[in-house]
Length: 130
Image (cartoon, rainbow, N blue to C red):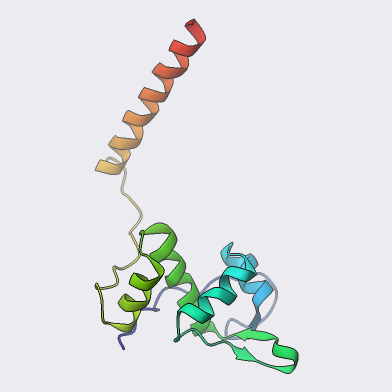
């Protein structure tokens, strides 16, 4: 399996050491992902296995958090299906693309945003005039 979870660590603002174990609630809050989604992803991604302690309480290691962040990026930002993301992470599917770099000013993405903003403004003026 290739190492695809090399993204930067999630900055937790809780006073714990960066390599401390995190509860499912802490991870959900930090990443903006609901807890039931994290539990479902544990079923769908065999490589996501947080530690389970008394009463089934989950504790995520830093590598688990990075993996969750990668899964979130693949599924919610890059349009992978859960199966496609799992296969990519297992190295059996498409290559996992790196996280997108921040867009530089004046890039094609900025041009698109400017065009969309102009269209929005024209529509707003047309609606106001109607």
